[in-house]
Structures are given as structure tokens and as C-alpha cells.
Amino acid sequence: MNGAQSNAAERRTAAGRDSLGCALAALGEGQELAGHGFVIYRKSHAGSSLHRVETPPSHRGVLVGVSLTGGHRRRIFTGTRSVSYDFAADSCYIRPFADDYRADIETGFEFLLLEISQAALHRTCAESGVPLAGGLSAPPAETDTVLAHLGRALLPALAHAATASALFVDQVVCAMQTHLVSRYHGVTVRAERGGGLSDLQMRRAQELLLAGMDSTVLIGDIASACDVSRSYFIRAFRQATGATPYQWLLARRVERARALLTRSALSLAEVAIQCGFSDQSHMTRTFARLTGSTPGAWRRGR
Image (tube, rainbow, N blue to C red; front, side, top):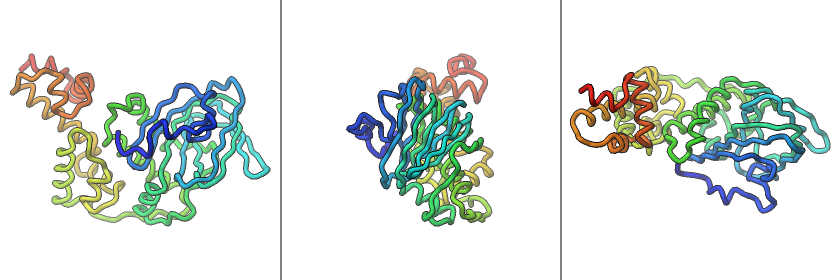
């Protein structure tokens, strides 16, 4: 992934806390993946001791948390008042970085966290036709199965951040941002009208996807080229092709792999790189899922 906001070392504070206000000594081994205008984290705490999470006000945007497991409790302070909340699996919270945040972590947890920059949030609000003022607001520990489903789809990419598909991650995060604005902004989102993508827009989108077969192209780049919002582009592209942009590109990679396996003497590892897969095993898994055969077996059969 590229376009990170800052590197991992720079996101550590001098007080032994991470950039989200958690004491580093209290956390288990975490995962992190940065993209254009966002950072995804997976963080856990065994619950062996009480500790406090706190961050001063800043202009970093918002942090969205999805509880991957149940049984977590935290006491959140607002001024001199505090309220305890119990988090079940798939419950979430939203906290703007503009607010002072203090919470006592009373039990263990495992969270997927999405940090959205102010600029990225502004873009999603503009695409949805709502003002940025007011931001996002949700009661802590509210269950959101849609957000949880999208967040869990990112876990495999988060576990293999070095080889994660930027297009796939960007596509899922875009869907998460659109859902957040639609559900938690407090202003009715404008319905984006249109008759789908024109032939010219579709050709342009497919050209850009193929040109970025190595996953260097992002949803925002293609949507801008088609002069539509990112959420509209994903929806219209799927209506036209029956697949998301990432699924469509995977199918084209497999088509290219089949051609190379037939017409060239390249090794499987070389074919994988030529077709934009992260490695041979990634190609094998995708090839087998879409064709019912491994690349090696398919080549021998030809």
C-alpha cells in the first residue's frame, strides 16, 4: 500500500502510547495498513489490567471502531461525567479526533479500527451531498452489521499488508465511508441519479483497470475519470458487469494467465508477476476459485 499519512514510527507518541491513545505496553501484537486518506488497524488487549485511552483534540478526522469479539467494556468520560458501555461482536463506535477523548478500558478487546482523514471524510460528504459540519455521530456500542461485514472483509488484507491489493482495500474502505455518512451523518444523503455508466465511461473505466492490473489504480482515479462519485461508480459498474471493479479485474488477470500458460514457457511464478498477482500462491488460489483448476493442472491439460 502507498499514500500513507505517516510511517508507523511517526505514529508513536513519546509517552509510550500509540497514535490512538492506547498504552503500547497493554496492547497485543497489532496490524496496520495505510492507504490514501485512511489507516486501518487491528488492535487487541488481553484485559489483564485496567488502562486508560486518551487523545487530545486534533484535526485528524474520525476513528471508527468495530468490535471483532464480544465481552468488551469501557468507561467513556465526557467532562466530569462517565458512562460504561458493553460492546458485543459487530458493535461499533465513532469518535471524532476533534474531541478530547478519555476512556478506561475495563476488559479485553479486539477491534478493527478505521482512521479517516479530514480530507477523505470531506470528499465522501461532498459526494453524498451533505455538509461536513456536524460530522458523524453514533451511540457507543451500537451494532452495525453492514459496517462489521465490510470491516471483516479487510482482515485478510490487513494480515498481509505488504501484498494487499490497493484496489480491493480502496473499494471496501470507500463502501465503509459511504455507509458511515449515510447512516451516521444526521442529514439525509442525496440520492445520486443516473442511468448507469455510458459506453464511453465503461470503456474508460475498463482501460484504467487494465492499465493498473498490478493494483496501482484506485477507485477514486477511475470515478474521477468517469466524472461520477466513487460509490456511484462501484454500484453502476457492478450493475453493468455483474462484478465489482476488483472482481472484474481478477477475472481479467486469470484470462491473461490462461493465455500466458498456453502460449509461453514462463514459469508459474513469472506468469503470476506478469498478471499482477502478488505471488504464485495468490494466482493459484484465485485461478482455482474462478476456473476450478490450478494453473499447473490447467497448463498440463492443454
